[in-house]
Image 1 (cartoon, helix red, strand yellow):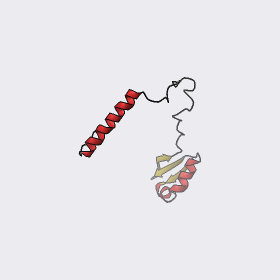
Image 2 (image 1 turned 60 degrees about the vertical axis):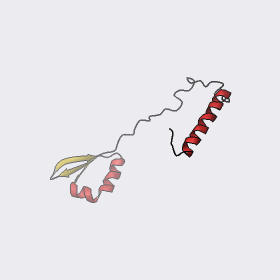
Image 3 (image 1 turned 45 degrees about the vertical axis):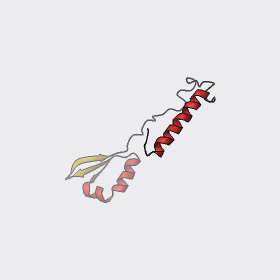
Image 4 (image 1 turned 90 degrees about the vertical axis):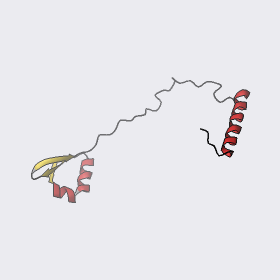
Length: 93
């Protein structure tokens, strides 16, 4: 573990950070007393584990089937109503 005074740390900060990234701790002193330690951060744990749900999720056979006619008809009415309100200067969300 290297110990440097604050003035040296200020002038050689990038070198000290490189040494810390390599795994060596660096202590910065002020008036001969330890003030801070520059150290490497721990590697973060992976938040997502790919394949964790493999075999546990089922997609229905009709997932990508065409929509029923009544749903499509309603969608058309809604789209036309939105067009009319936008044309009138109104916004519907």
